[in-house]
Image 1 (cartoon, rainbow, N blue to C red):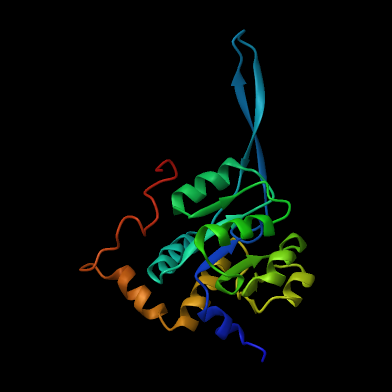
Image 2 (cartoon, one colour):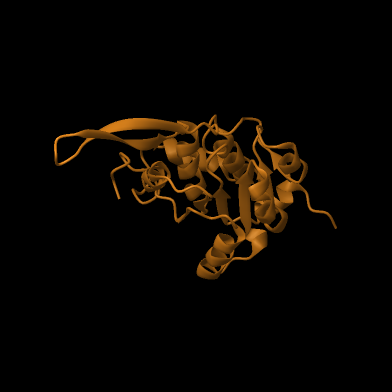
Length: 205
C-alpha cells in the first residue's frame, strides 16, 4: 500500500534540514574583514554570512510543542550555521557532511528511532540519498527538479522564505496538533518552557 504524505507525516518524531537553499535562500555572502597584525600591518580575513527566516525560527518552537526534535545536516562548515543552531537550540547539528546518511544513522542510533520516523527537507541532489530513505521527504519550492520529483511533499515557499515553517506546519497539521501548538505558543497564561523556545540571541548557549 502506498502511503500518502499525510500518513507519512503522522509518524514523524525528528525533522532534519539542509541549510543552504532550505533554511536560507542559497546566497552565501563572503565579507572581507580587516585584521590588524602584531606588527601593525593590516590584512583581511573572510567572514561568511547567511540570512535566515524568523518564520522558520518560530516554527522550530511549534515543532517542539508538538513533541518533535530538530536538526541540520549540511556539507558546508560555517560559524553562522553553528550560531543559528545555538539560537534555535537544535538537538542535532552536523556540518561538513558530504554523505548525509552517515549523520542520519548516528541520529537513529542515539534516539532509538527508525527511518519512518524521520523527515528530511532538502533542495539539491546531495540530499537525495536521505530523501530516498527517510519516512517523509520534503522538497522546498526552489528545489532542483530531480529533488522535487522524489519528494513526498513540496513546500509552497522557497528556502529562506518560510519553507522550513511550511514543512513543520504540514507535519503538525497531519498529526492534528497544529492549532493546539499555536494556541500554546501564544497563550500568556501557559508560558512555554525556556527549553522549548528559541534563545534571546545567538550568543546564548
